[in-house]
Length: 209
Figure 1 (cartoon, rainbow, N blue to C red):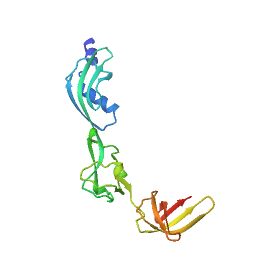
Figure 2 (cartoon, rainbow, N blue to C red):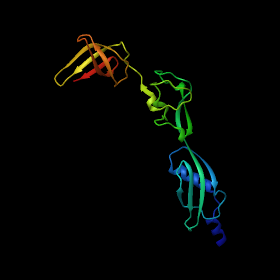
Figure 3 (cartoon, rainbow, N blue to C red):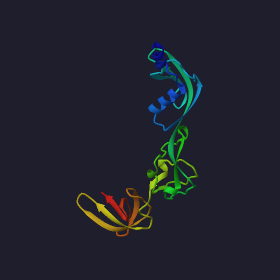
Figure 4 (cartoon, rainbow, N blue to C red):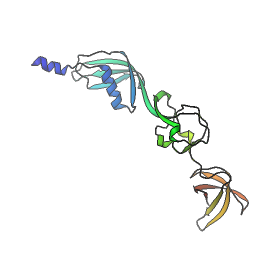
């Protein structure tokens, strides 16, 4: 009976498996590649209930201390690579092009190669336009995206001038492209002046004083 109890407590386990489970539970990445340098193999001490990093950081070269309630411990040194999802483009694209679903795809890459501001959701890209030309298979970043223009240079727009006391409207000519919420320059023929206003809808620009 005692031998059976000892067998149950001293289960055979793999340090690589334990470390991988620890990373997946405690870190946000959907995929991790683990290359054990030392301390791998089957263990006959009780399954560890405590894991601590004694040197290094994830991702990178890390030493883990695996300890059991019995006070026994073992060390595992490993190279850890982490991967996450990004949105990339299937083809080279030009500045000003609108992005549709056929232009992009979701792929997983090493987090060390993920640029700042990388987009991970296709819906965050669809309908947006590029602020710069890009080559093929490049992770899409937020600084490359802008809302599509709803006012084009040369369009006739309705200018709404608002103050605390009154509102007046006038006809204007857009001197720049712009998307909803952006400020553009508009020429007002009635005053023969160039003013700056905020796009508040299709062919509508508001100037607040």
